[in-house]
Image (cartoon, rainbow, N blue to C red; front, top):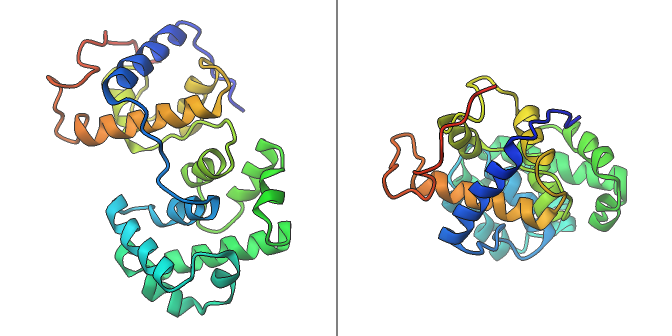
Length: 225
């Protein structure tokens, strides 16, 4: 895993980081008060905008359902109704239930025990949980667990593709490796870098791009692998 190496990209990737960091500053991402909130948010944000997730999280918080114990004991249909703003709410209720069952069976309800696992061991286990794919698993590992793993999302893929770092069909694993093999192993760096890419995607690198004001406008075209 993570064996895809292009040494020439190291300086370019750090150059991208510094351009974006100078423009946006420290983004303090992910917006949550606890590791559990990060996990719940990572599951709920699948296929929806973050403002919808915030509404669902507010519903959970106001009903005192933002705890491991509460999520385990609340009925799935009741939970689903609280998740309505996030879309696909019945499916997401099933996924939250699957995660808390996993936490009970594997780690006796303890997030501390879960995050004490080695990175690759825990990543493999998370990917075995129904509804948790690579982006969700890596978001949990990085933002809730402080593990040094780079999160790849649609914004990352779009920005890298438009600047010629990757081809249209480059895999999640190869995109992740591009960062992890060419940057220092540093969870805080990965955290901020991903947040910078998300903000660039939201403000500039949209489906219809706004290139002129983008801090990456002057970035030289790269050669796709």
